[in-house]
Image (cartoon, rainbow, N blue to C red; front, side):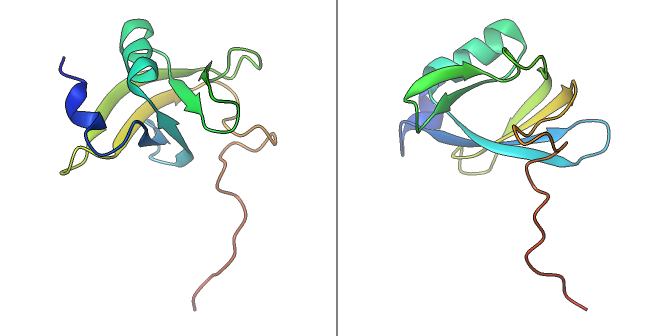
Amino acid sequence: MDFDKYFVKDKLIPAIVVEETNGEVLMLAYMNRESLEKTFQTGYTWFYSRSRKELWNKGATSGNLQKVVSITADCDDDTLLVKVHQTGVACHTGNYSCFFKEIYKGE
């Protein structure tokens, strides 16, 4: 696999994580080359923490693991869509998805 093409524009690539069974968006995180490689090697999501400046395996401490079903790149190879089977909740707040704060709802 040629990982280089995903890191031409930047050292980090956004990864949109969705539950494969229902299509619900669970979270947005960032991957660097190493975390993408580890995701491929292990079959579980790995990300790069921009605040801690380190790799992290989603669910390693909480048990809320994400088993990867598929990874798709967008048309420009600068965003990834990661379909997973989520164990437990995805958000560190205890919510199933990180996207639970509705800020606008049209009529």
